[in-house]
Amino acid sequence: MANSEELPLNLYRTMRLIRAFEERCLEMSLTGEIVGGIHPYIGQEAVAAGVCSQLRPQDVITSTHRGHGHVLARGADPARMLAEICGKTTGLNLGRGGSMHAADVSLGILGANGIVGAGAPIAVGAAWAGRQSGREVVAAAFFGDGALSQGVVLEAFNLAAVWSLPVVFVCENNGYSTTLPVDQALAGDAVSRAAGFGMTSMAVDGMDAEEVAARTAEAVDACRRGAGPVFLECRTYRFFGHHSFEQQMTLNYREEAEVAGWRERDPLELQRTRLPREAVEAVDAEIARTIDAAVDFARSSEAPDPADALAHLYADGTTGRPGTV
Image (cartoon, rainbow, N blue to C red):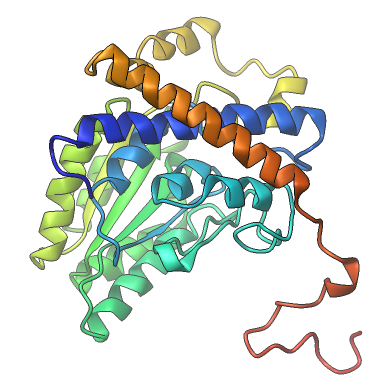
């Protein structure tokens, strides 16, 4: 967690890293270097940067199918993250997690998750386990607006509130559940729904990294004081489609004017205006070198050996039940 003087530039650095990383991933997915495509986080960088800036090394996060930004903001190595997405053995998870399941437990990253809302109960479990073992652990659970109607998320709210667990529930409301507008998918509103569980709940400008950081600081402080879970609805927007495949499809669920309007509130550009030009240019150059090095690392790394396909499936080292292989 950076001090207040370092925070503005560090927030920009994190967002710049995420943006450059995602732009390169988009390019590589469209050329086929990244098989299966990605869910771009472009436009939502302020949420990951702001939340993770307020966490301590012992804290943990759970992520989503749109999780590259969270993983990078928590401090994962961009080179190993890209290698993971490319399915290489040097990846964070030996190339087996891919884009939607990257994890680094050493950094408190308990995993991105391809199941909508599935990270919420994992975060609750981690917070409970921390308390049981006498460790001061705050868990931050990221999920989208579409997860607010998933039963497991509501169950996680309930359990965290009943047990007064130190969990910050971070809803990234980007306005759409894939292509369905949130006002057609969600009865009531996100903050009221979470407040119904008796936890502190608030809406946040998810395009302003400094506001996200400030509200997260309040939430984390409440968790550490034993005040129970906190819900943050970060109102944000993804500049690209739900998935990179939308670049090759014709989907007309968003008006061009709507996208353009949100782009006028680009979180990177907002943060850029708060910083000296020389500092911004230095960060931009630094991140460009980092991304180029990550691409070189991923491209030069080895692909997994098919003979090892059944390795690393079980904690005890078992490769499969007798008679199955």
